[in-house]
Length: 140
Image 1 (cartoon, rainbow, N blue to C red):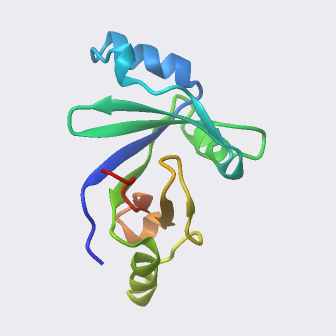
Image 2 (image 1 turned 180 degrees about the horizontal axis):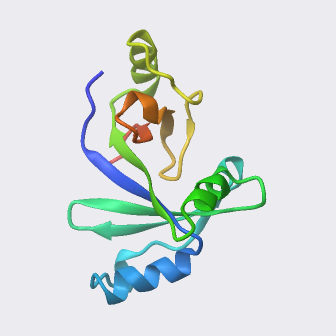
């Protein structure tokens, strides 16, 4: 498996709207560069992308009491880096190759916020960082 471009960095936050304020006031991001809040009930998160010159920042907020992001925010109450996401040509193939190399893949391929297949690799396999692998969005 060979990873491609860095698609986004996921940041867990207690409030997406509050996080938007930081990116607008401190970092000069304009409203046009921020996507509306979406929800992925199957993954227990709300999300919004902040578009920057060479990538995206995915803001993720818990959706519901059983959201996996809640546990992260209990340990990091103000939020923090949750994951890094790299593009791969074929998620199924990447999953097979990661497992063959001894990595712990945390899920079966499923549809992510960009509408394409994703998987997650356990942080213990990547120097303490949760890695998301995704197929690039069509026309990208």
